[in-house]
Image (cartoon, rainbow over all chains, first blue to last red):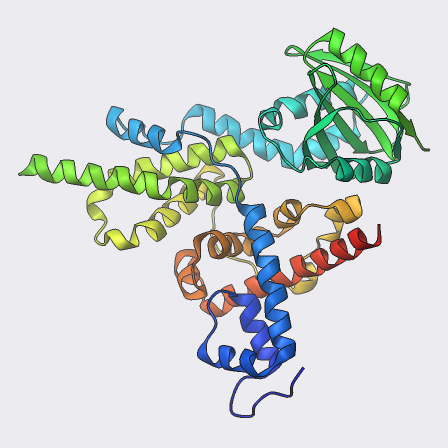
Length: 240
Length: 171
């Protein structure tokens, strides 16, 4: 790091400016970067991080959004928020405010039911490909306390979701039979029972203790659930 | 003549919806973090914009105008009484509670874990390309405050990215 030009910008000032707005540097900042190798390196690193942040923020936009906005203009503007939106907003507030406690207080069959509700709240997990990296999946399982003895299938979606103890993993994979199944890994207190099952809205789930807490398998039919549950039990060895 | 003006206005509106609908949606998503609420917020924003389309004096300023409307719609939805910012210290930027997943923590979750006062200007700058001065105008605060929050937000993310990268390299 240089001491800086007494008439120009020093390294600290440059870094503050670069972090505040990486894309719009002042003439003084550009001049400093030209003279200071350490700050050039810093700028490169910030630019790389900026690209990663931009990718993370670039969430998928629903198809036909602009068409629906235009259609609404043509068919008449509704005044104020719809009751549906108030309900949705309330759901979001409740999820953030009480979701944690709900998981914590879960009693018999609640773990499996709440896992289904989580899946129902995130339908894009079945239509989006995200972090579908088998090696990342293996590492996630290892960190959680599960050693893979054989592949469960093709991982299509992996996302961290808020849960009581911090964050849990939401994983969707395609089995060898071509069926979609969801695996949810929740760090939590140990379950009291060996397993819990639930059926809600056409979804079927089984929750079992494993690794740092418990895991849940969710599928759209009891038959698939039975097969996937058996597969997970035979192909994953849980520590703890 | 009046008919022509209305047609031109509606065409401009439609072009605006096509040009900025996606950007507005992403901004809305990072405000409320729910895709359904985000779409409804965008719909309400454009509905309100269309209602007040005549008051738009400069079409070049339409995007910041829409962002301001969306921000107010979001505040109205959650019945927030104030839109102002709090001045958290850097120490208050506690992302560690979200770091239980260790090296696998995703950047998206880190951004989500940022306080709204840091997340909002970051989204406007990274996705919208706005300068600090423009963000300050939209958020009704000073340029200095925006610069401070953006610096702190990036410092927090940078620290976690470095930790995450180190952990990945060691495995």
